[in-house]
Image (cartoon, rainbow, N blue to C red; front, side):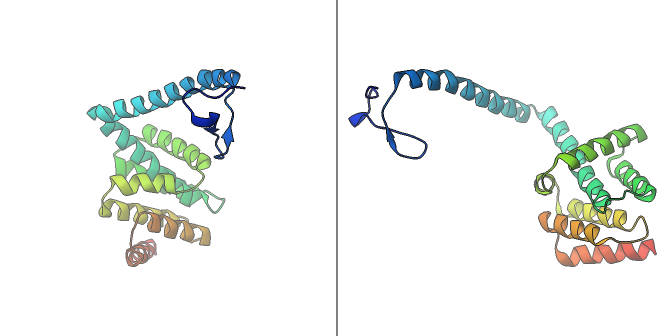
Length: 191
């Protein structure tokens, strides 16, 4: 082992902060490894900027992301109790068709993508943070209203469904009084 070039006393810093001697063989391994990581990171950053700079794609990307996030949250509320009833499936399709102006085939594709996204998601924050950034207060409240419609679609309310609506409302910064008001309105309409 030799002293690293340009370092006083021959000590560098490891990940834990302790001094280590420079090893030419290891510097070769690190030098061969780091550029690939940097190139990968730079490529990913460049792709992100390219997507953001291309106005048409940024708008389309945003719309698709919003659709998928809304659909995933709606799917989650119907699936959380372990049973997706035919009434809930029909209501989910109707809500997505009306909200986004989709044809039946596009709606089915969106629901399938939402199911996959919901299964792969570790939490709800990924969806809600996107929606909180891109939607105004009224649109976020409409999402909570749609969730309540799905909760009451099968004629009852499971405690897991109610808990999901509460958590999503909190993550979307929809005030508790609005969430409760929407629940009452939808419950009264459902009869």
